[in-house]
Image 1 (spheres, rainbow, N blue to C red):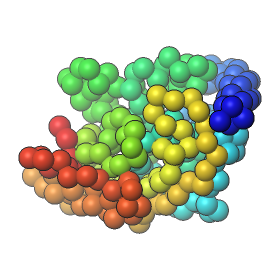
Image 2: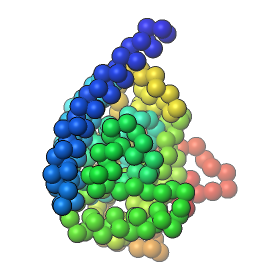
Image 3: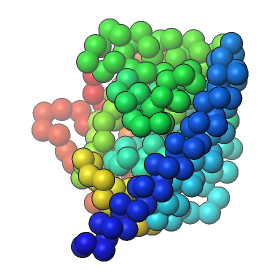
Length: 259
């Protein structure tokens, strides 16, 4: 155990140092492109492709060959992924195609280095404590997607699942699908919760399961059938996860969707 803690501390130290250097370089570029939100987002995507992959390597996370190409086949799109670990951030910024805006809780700005670059790059910050504000932010996101012809990456569960199991999806991505008619690309992640658990900085090298499911058209999505459509996406996610990460029944509630 002491040896694993030492190894974890070393990985974190090198990772933070690399992130700080990368942010310094890309923050300068983002500031140069300040007048153009589209260029700022795309510059941050390049940052993510580099730092996301390097940080996963530093964490000892093995990833399947060809997954980045699988995800980027369909673009622009609404990319949704399950959320169980801090590693998911690096997975997301690595896999997101150039021209993809991120949606994250506003507290992300307090993450060292990464959060500050995220904030000035034009990505979306949600205030989850204020439902009206969150809905307005998601509405603006739909407008941004149409204006700049870009995609969006979302973790629809809204929070990390400590046990790795799939949690109910919030409906924001569904409303965005209705507004933009972009296809939905489910990106299923397994094993990340074993590599870095919630509320822990201990990193355990592991093999990640990463899989892009076939793109789902949203041309026939409406407010009337939204719950049904989200339930279908949720079921596809659940079926693709290993047994120990499948959703547990929620008594007296629809486990597929949350308000």
